[in-house]
Amino acid sequence: MGLGLIGSFLPVLPGPLTGWLGLLVLHLTKAVELTWTFLGITLGVAILVWILDYFIPAMGTKKFGGSKFGVIGTTLGLLIGLIFVPVPGGFIIGAFVGALIGELMHDSNDKSRAVKAAFGSFIGFLLSATLKFMVSLVFLVLFCQEVYEHWSGLIG
Image (cartoon, rainbow, N blue to C red):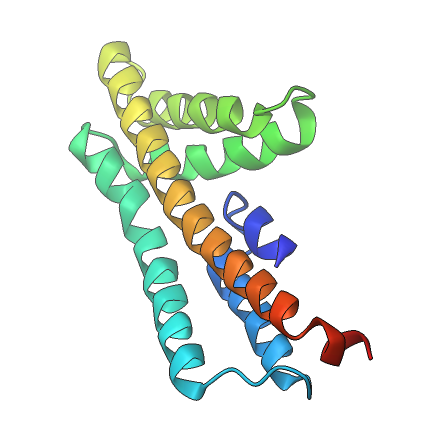
């Protein structure tokens, strides 16, 4: 479940799908029996969010006049910011700077358009990450609720 929350911000780890695997593992214990309807609905939500994750950043970039370079820059900047920027939220700074660099590589003559497109790419990333985080958080709450209700069967 923790990996699901972390995966909400890391592009290499599908957050809600990873969180859903936590629900599945809980179901596979003998103490907790989730319904197949519950597992199917939560899986459907996780897959829908996973698909939307590919469209939301691109829509934000297009809305603000950006290119694929901005989207790629956002992703690379996110990873670099996560690893090399030692401040809380370094991945956010990295995502914006990466989008800006990507847009400047695409068209270095129009700096104001590059800044606007980088902002759009960054907003798309934030919206997508927020959606993934919220779904992963709901999955975590459901997981904790089931663990709490079946605690004696899980540890006994």
